[in-house]
Length: 211
Image (cartoon, rainbow, N blue to C red; front, side, top):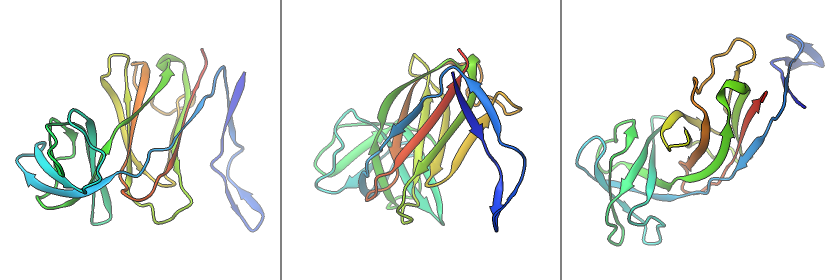
């Protein structure tokens, strides 16, 4: 048996302000740690449609024909991502893609980061979920780009997505009054992509369950 403590106190001048932490008893409380690497900077050199275009990446890029990628960009201090794009035939620095979902592509010639999705098995019996939490921990304050997390069922279908960033805590106390972010669909896998072309991050995901 494990327990999860949820604390929303404010501490100032040695005084604790707020309620007593809530403790949830759980059979399992795995915390998954992932380290999505920095990825490929480039430009959206051709924008054929909202989900179709061609990227021009650096000569040492790591994208290959057939990859599934997320395309990240940042505009007016806001992070955006078009996820689950399929890469066509790569020719040197030219990377065509199509079939993505999420935010429509930015204007042509926009700066982007193209990221191969990293997959990880994270089984979760949604009916048993007590507490869900995720946070990107990174000591480097320069990391302001988005991290895309996709939660998939056993057939690979998307159940829930989250575009988060450094030091943003996302949580749901399902055993309390919070809605289950996954509804009634069990989770089998996640994919993660890093929107930075220069900084890696560490991502933590908690899926506490009473099985």
